[in-house]
Amino acid sequence: MKGWFINLLTDTNFWFSVITACVAITALIQTQVQIRLSNKQHLFDKRVESYLIAIGLLRLYENNYSSFDGQDEPFLAVDVQFSFFTNNIYLEQIAPSISSPLGSPEHKKFLIKMENLTETAAKIKFLFSGNASVLLGDFVLRYQELLFAMFQYHIIIVKMQEENEKNSITLEEAERRVGEKQQRINMQKAFDNLKQAYICIEKENVKEIIEKQIKL
Image 1 (tube, rainbow, N blue to C red):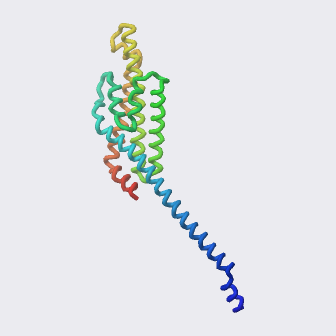
Image 2 (image 1 turned 45 degrees about the horizontal axis):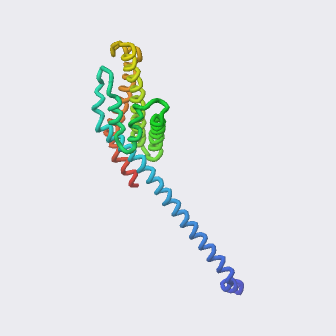
Image 3 (image 1 turned 30 degrees about the vertical axis):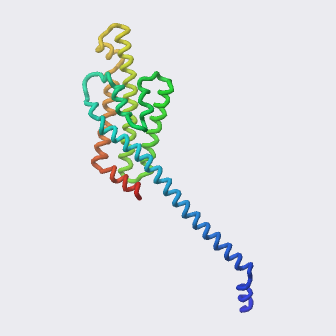
C-alpha cells in the first residue's frame, strides 16, 4: 500500500492530471467572475441609459409645464408647445414631425420614437426595484401619451383652419365641426396625468432612490 502511494506521488501522469484539473477549475472560476462583472456592467449601462432619458423628460416638463394652463379656448400654437416639449437631444429629431403630413418620413420617426418611449417606460420598471421604478416608468409613459395627444390635437387644429378657410365660417363653427373641444379635453387630461406623475416623483424622492440603485 505504501509503495503504491509513493509510486503515485512520483507518477508524472498523475501530477499532470492534477495540474490540468486545477488549471481548468481556476479558468472556470475566472470565467464566472468575468461573466458576473460583465453582467453587472451591462446592467449599469442599461440603467444609466434609461435614467438619462427619464431625467431629460423631467427637465423638459419642469421647463415647459406652465404652457398648459387649462385655457378654455383652442391651443392654436400647439405645434410651438410641441417643439418645447421635444427640445432635447433625445427628442429633437421628432420636433418637425408635428407639421409634417401623415405617412411622411418625419411621421414615421415620430411613431418609432413613441414606441421607444413606451419600451423605455417598461425597461425602467424591470431595471430598477421598488415603487420608485414604477413611478419613474409611469412618468415616461405619461410623457409619451402627452406628446401623442399633442400630435393628434394639431391634426384637429389644421382641419379646423382648413374648414374656416374653405367654407368661410367662424372659428367657433369650425371648432364644432371638427370636434376640437373633445380633443382639447383629451390633451389636457394627458397633461394632468403627466403632472400627477411628476408630483409623485417629487413626493417620493424617486430621483435620489434611483441614483442610489445605479451606484450599487
